[in-house]
Image 1 (cartoon, rainbow, N blue to C red):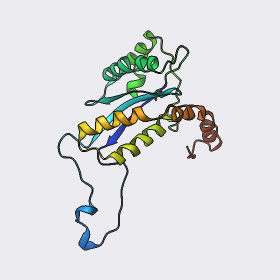
Image 2 (image 1 turned 180 degrees about the horizontal axis):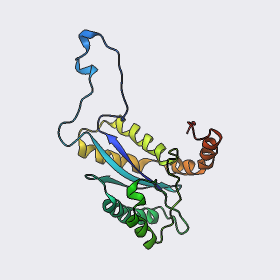
Image 3 (image 1 turned 135 degrees about the vertical axis):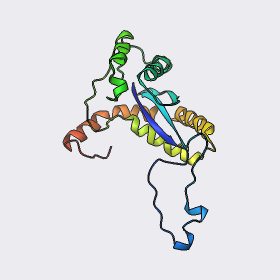
Image 4 (image 1 turned 30 degrees about the horizontal axis):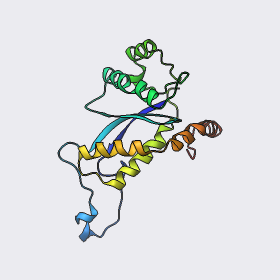
Length: 191
């Protein structure tokens, strides 16, 4: 079970945009990107997936700390595992964010008998959920949600639509991903 957090921008993909325009057109509305003054322009999501499909998606309210992270896990991990019919023997993955590696979080995971994948610190981001986040962001940008509430709704709908075959393929090809990074000595790869 792979997991991670991501930020979803209200007005499209969260990347820098550049455009050329004539001096007289610089303030034309078609040459500007709108912002949101009320409710904020983005949301933070926690999600998980396995080879069997996408798990639960949780919208994070406020600033996440260790206690909130453990609550998110408590409300989402086992329900996702059951819904995906993963059975026994699965391993949980999260990165080395301080909330994930806090003593209280480690104790909680141990108490719940969850086996956690050892994740190297300062490593390239090899979590295949990054591919799902990208796919989700593209789908959301195409739907153009009107406000934050609509953005949350669209995120949930689009996350649920990601085919299990896409998830399965990401997990199946994970070995190739690692071999590619090792061969390239940790530098950029096609993944």
